[in-house]
Length: 74
Image (cartoon, rainbow, N blue to C red; front, top):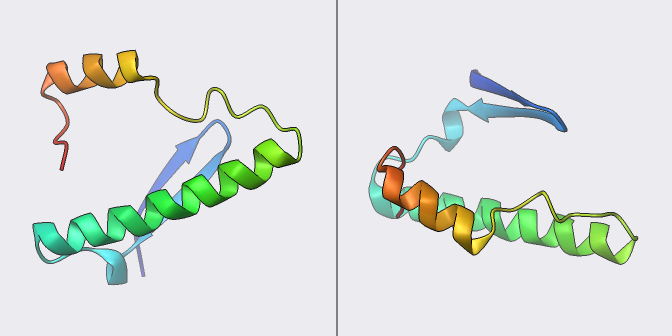
């Protein structure tokens, strides 16, 4: 069952109830799995000549986001 759908300029992400972590350790493992997949996709895309510069935050952008305290970095 889809719990939430997030629409982006470049696509849609569906969050399913089976992927909701039960604790912070499970959340970290799921996020690591997702980030590994993003990195795999971006490496393949870059190899094919696709510009991926705007797919990820820069270090400066991450520092600004972290200071906002709106998000929890785990």
